[in-house]
Image 1: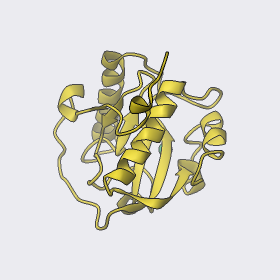
Image 2 (image 1 turned 180 degrees about the vertical axis):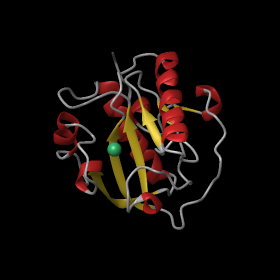
Image 3 (image 1 turned 90 degrees about the vertical axis):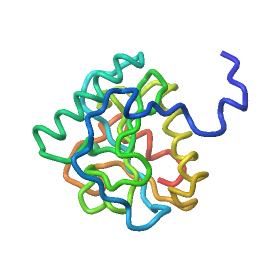
Image 4 (image 1 turned 30 degrees about the horizontal axis):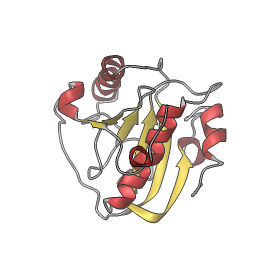
Length: 174
Ligand SMILES: [Zn+2]
């Protein structure tokens, strides 16, 4: 595909809340201190998606579930990443999320759209996760010496799925 170096650096394409059709948040609280030290990886336990319209629909369904079933103020994750290669803005870099009990006010959480118990996300999604983390470092939102973990490392859950969990344990900063 001839990926140039220019494509590998910098921030990935981030689909704004307006572009995926987000509902308004019911309240905002902001991270007390930045850059944050922790980056958590999650999966959404849904079907995967391979186009922006498909991924946007799944992100809206996650938001509805979080707001209507959990009663949260907004979608829980900071960002979501689809196999279309896009990142989707959840609570973004600056707002406290609802994703990792005990760490919400000191972490950025990235959710891979899909279920990754037996397969890993495709290369487009994985590359976007890595670029998003680097983007956060470049913007001063994530510490240069951040610690990467999977949700299951700190909470009682199978998230982010066996296959994805095994993979991120091989990544830098894990
Ligand atoms: Zn999780």
